[in-house]
Length: 240
Image (cartoon, rainbow, N blue to C red; front, side):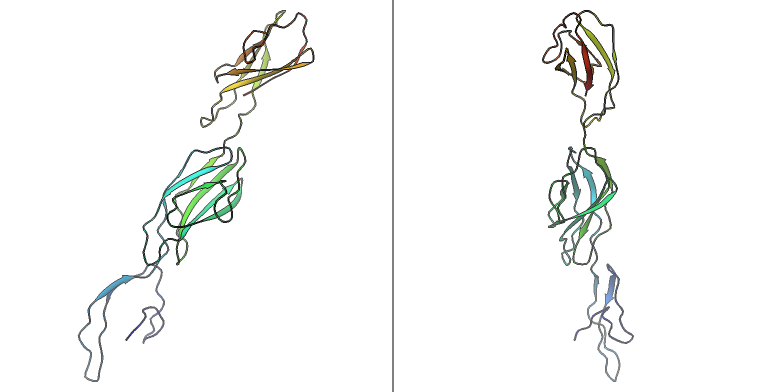
């Protein structure tokens, strides 16, 4: 009193169904020497399938070593519930995968130490591309979500065209060109380093706008006091 559609029995044999096949108008009729009975009640169903794709994959606030992700869960078939997610991503050309268990998860941090295998911390300036998430259930792995890409934060590039202005008896004016700025980690100031008669000094200038500073002009933190007449100022550099 049982029969499995797709199980290979019957005449002709009932071959295997494809995942997600929609099977309708199922009925059973008894047969005897006189003929075939009226139909039974009619049923419809579908075979189990991998989950639908994850949607709305998005980036959170990126740091120097981590990339947070969020997404929306796909519809869940109670007959083959989600068991977790597979997060795939490429770091500087190397493809990596981390499996997150549990259907409730709708987020993961690349470089945050979670997943299996563990997602190790990233390095500043890493290029992370082809980030995608796929749901997993007992049937298999879903098609990929939308993809996102980003880079981890890093220190600013080097200052360029550092130059010296008109030197006086007590001051050395400097000018420079600001490097390209990452809006996610904007430049907050400048560090001016210099050596006066063999003694190393540092002055911090706050704010991204200044592209000049006067050694000996009384500014900076700690402030740059007036130079002695004839002072030898060497090893001047500026860092964002």
